[in-house]
Amino acid sequence: LELSLMMTIYQIMHLVSRAYEAPYGVKLFLEGEEELQGNKALSDYEIDEDISNLLDKINESNKKAGIVLHAIHDYSNINEICKLTKNILILTIEKPGYSGQKFLENSYNLISKINKLQIRKKINLCIDGGINNSIISKIAADGIVSGSSVLKSERPIRQIMIMQTLLRYEK
Image 1 (cartoon, rainbow, N blue to C red):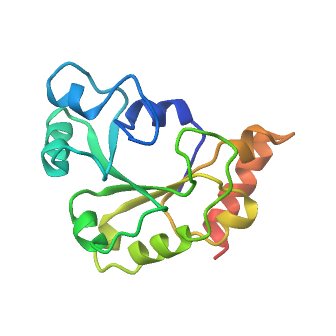
Image 2 (cartoon, rainbow, N blue to C red):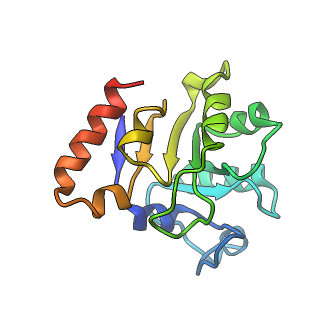
């Protein structure tokens, strides 16, 4: 189980989202004009380019490829999506890139769909957005990205430890 606070690294690895502007993107990477940073590169599923081709290119660059799903969307083909990669990140907020947002209640449905898949054990599932102590205890995931809950805490290290404990033991 992992609790990640490194939002800037996550943003470097998140290749593109049509929801917000970024100085890097899928097209630049595919054309060889953009180099990947970090050890993982995640891309929104809703890109204009061929997602399979992009994931192959990421893997060829010795990075771990992954797909970002947004809880605001309904994925009727979730099984096929999850077969494309081992790394899935679910954004559980309305507007990617903005800290301090509330967790979207319909996110539980998407998380549950993935957790019920037969291939779930092969997937590294990470949840990002609106995570606090009351939410974390209801989520079954391999990793959590929590910014505001930790950074706005009077005792951030203690908050991290509390969240790790809740993630590990309460469901």
